[in-house]
Length: 210
Image (cartoon, rainbow, N blue to C red; front, top):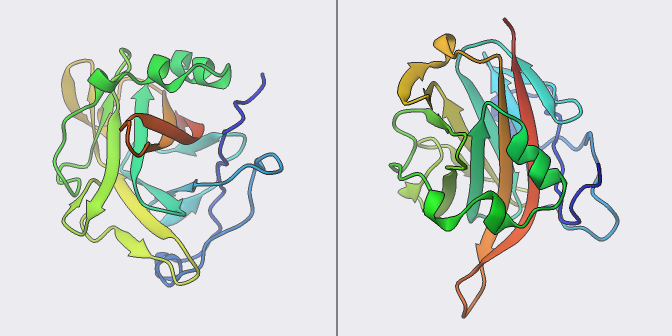
């Protein structure tokens, strides 16, 4: 199916140590390349047990235990993340549905700064996270999880230890599903109107090892 023009790029993290990532190096072995002229506002990787897990064709295979989502942003701002156990929303995103049809303003999940609980909400009704950055003490990534990259941009880490799913908070080990689907949209507010402007969208299918 055709991708939306502002579709982003999911990145395969190379087997570099976390300390190398923090020193400013970032992998450039992209699985899908943006069309000519498209700006890339974020790339994505996954770490589990201290290892960079390959992402292929927007899919990653993980064990049912905590993992860390690692973003590289050209600029900090709002990263909207919606997780569900069905691919329906991702299918709509791939068909080019407008952001307001995918992630309504009223469906934002209230959450604390600096990811104290390591929780990911899984919603079939379009509820989503806004993993924003407004300052060193006002962001929704891990505590000490935002680093400026020497060669440009920022690396931001968000660890997932628990899921809020079907009205219950569960450790990942007890997730009742073998798949999770993440829709990822980088946005910014338009000056004057205050309306959301979409910069880039992408998606990731997480396949848990049974």
